[in-house]
Picture 1 (cartoon, rainbow, N blue to C red):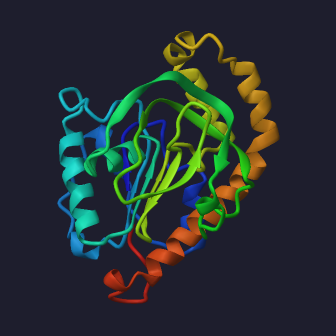
Picture 2: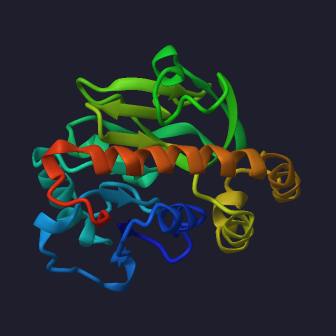
Picture 3: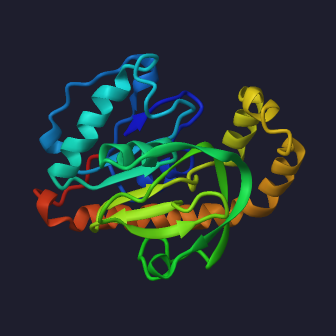
Length: 243
């Protein structure tokens, strides 16, 4: 699991992985960790978010290495889940443009689940018009061959699936209320550049929407883990999965 920033952590997903008995390791790229793993033992790859852009390789050299790992994982049919920056990294690795949007989506906002998304076993638990948590100013085009699962008013590609086990989510299903509070404290620059975003409203909305988001996230990641376990190409043993 790749973590790009100390504040964009696994969040509620850690509880889900523990409930599913899934062994995992967090690679803190922001802290200089560049592991030499035995990648044959890695059954899935989760790529978390971060404040940088996908092309910030000069400031964040690990992005170049990370893109190679993502490409190799896809080529080897390793299940991959990307969240926010993680989804953008999957998209750019697959040759899709990543762009600066005209509007930053920060806070709780609606997405529309497409007909394909409504019958997807990971996203189908979300209502057709779901309120989720966002914090991004970049977007990306749908990768070639991928299925569009969700959209929003300002960003057409909010979620996609490529094949059965490659997923990208522009929004955050993993965030906890505590994480949101920390982001509001640590990312005042983002808020200053987005005067239409009100911290007090985000905190009030968190009380309303966080319980449903926790349910969506648990169902989503639980099914992803089950799909990893069923993945024929990586099912070398049945004694748990390494992420």
